[in-house]
Image: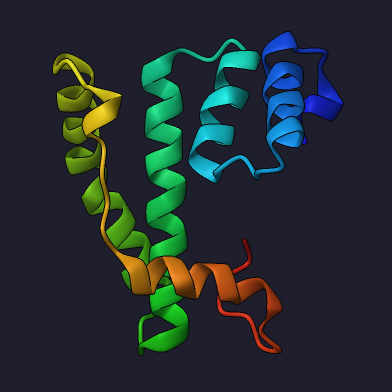
Amino acid sequence: MVNGLIDAPILTAAIDAAQEMEVEIHHCAAFGLAGAALGIEEESTLLAYGHQSLAILISSCQRLLPLGQMQATRMLWELKPLLAELVRLARENDFDIEQAACFAPLLEVGFMRHPTLPTRLLLV
């Protein structure tokens, strides 16, 4: 979407590389690339990504649990200080991308199957 709005060499290079390697760009990397292309500072981009991720998870909870809009909004609001602290800690510590790891295979498989389900839970 962002690539259609502005001419950004960083986005063009990422899209070209992904097409050449026949891979998709992960949504968190795409979000970071979009932030960089739009000139949004790193901290704000990280906070926006974290907020969006939390909002999607809470929205999913609303579909699965008896959780009202006010409760969901309160949860998101009350998590903001923790999100800000996590972003601060991530930026302060030297992060080695080679050590990044996540092991949640069932969650990943579920997300990969999600777009083809007849009834979708998430709007992503």
